[in-house]
Image (spheres, rainbow, N blue to C red):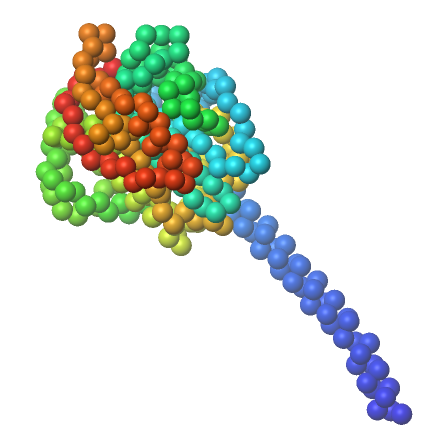
Length: 348
């Protein structure tokens, strides 16, 4: 009889132990979630404050780029049904009292569900139809109408839907590199690179180099060789891949919130901060294994031409280039080569 009673007592005590175990697990999970969220917010604010301090030190006023720059009008639609997002990436050179000039034009596609990432670079001398204006180089559309006219030009000529834009100046690129790779980013310099103009000096010897943010900027901007803009586009894509690889290290993933905060003061975008943090979370949960790249114009898809109003341009075979970019973004890439050369030309 006593034995039965003891067994009955043990059965009664088991649910209590399971309940205590569940409560303990729930408390531990909640604590971990709160700690992770607090860490992310702290790192985000730390990165943002450091970037604003750097801006203040380089400017004579306390105003930051974030204070001075309003988000440009961008007539786009939000992605639907969890479709991949297309972002227009614009690298700009901002000189005092002069309109901003775009040095880099890229379309990045990211699929948060599976971590797929693609990057198509459109060379700035590509000759296109600019809605409402005379045909010209594609970077002229940014000069004439900012990000939205550039978006409209890309959609008109290549039929791509662009959901967001992100425009960053050179200081922002330096901040990105120094945040992702505080000890420098390792680059294999293939050939001697030297350029000097005024206070700007670019000087790299062949071989493996560890570059800080400013040196990395010089590396991706260099075009004073036989490959000029074609080589620069290739180096830009190479650098983004190297930064992605660095970001996917254990220490790199912890820097994602800080990276978003660091770049925000230098960034003009229509992506809301909450959306950026959400994409940062998706990036951590579904890291990008490989970034597929494409260059427009594709190999054998253009000819060198010259117009009095535009200078030296790249005249496209539009059928071939549209087919290439649509196949690329629809997972039907046909492996168009990215190696070619052309003559150097004047800036817009």
